[in-house]
Length: 60
Image 1 (tube, rainbow, N blue to C red):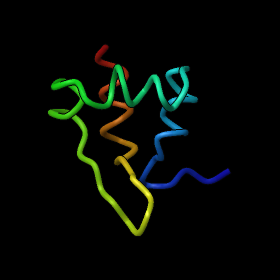
Image 2 (tube, rainbow, N blue to C red):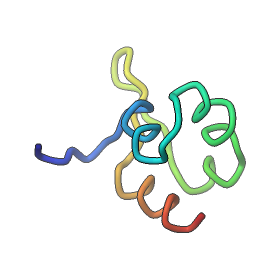
Image 3 (cartoon, rainbow, N blue to C red):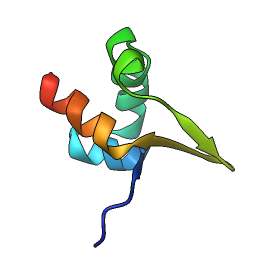
């Protein structure tokens, strides 16, 4: 599967691993995550830049 520039909440949760709800409650809204990763809304999808997410996950 070809990697895209953006990741969804479900893809991030799968990588962590955790549920999408746990990701929202315990990771997404932390100041560290907000500082490291920007959110982009396209239509009804909430997306996160893959490179920023991977760098954040490596740093924790």
